[in-house]
Structure formats: structure tokens, C-alpha cells
Image 1 (cartoon, helix red, strand yellow):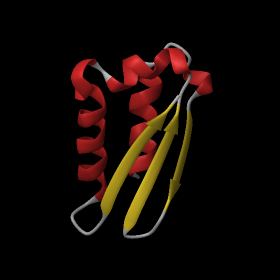
Image 2 (image 1 turned 180 degrees about the horizontal axis):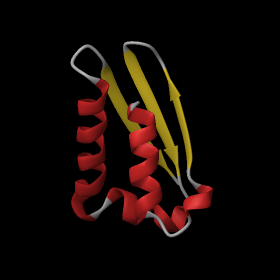
Image 3 (image 1 turned 60 degrees about the horizontal axis):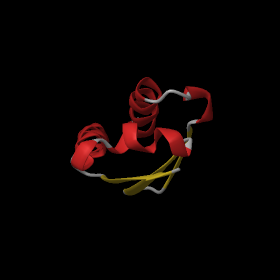
Image 4 (image 1 turned 180 degrees about the vertical axis):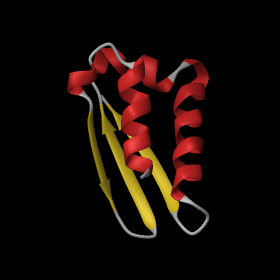
Length: 75
């Protein structure tokens, strides 16, 4: 599942993994919402958005060719 992969990656990045909340909804269009502690936003987004872009790429690959995956992060 792409949501499980995103949760694993984000919890490995942040200083407060207990505060990470992941919610996923949708069928062919999967929307994954990630909520982290505001102090951890910089770690998840990364310089120039590189980290979140990599997470989105991995989630889309895990979703397969027949499924669109969107990942949003909030703090």
C-alpha cells in the first residue's frame, strides 16, 4: 500500500514520529494526507522540496500504473 510506505518514510524522517498521522481515501485516485508536528515540516519537505518530491515519486510507483496517487503534507 502506498499509504503504508509514506507512513514508514515520514516516521523515519521526523523527530516526533508519534505525532505523524496518515489518512488515505479514494479508489483509482488515492489521496494521502500526512499531518506532522509543525517543527518537523522542514524535514519532510526538504530543501527546495526534494524530500517530499521523492516521497511522492515512491508513493506513485507503489500505487501502480492504474492508480493515481497524490500526497499532501500539513503541519
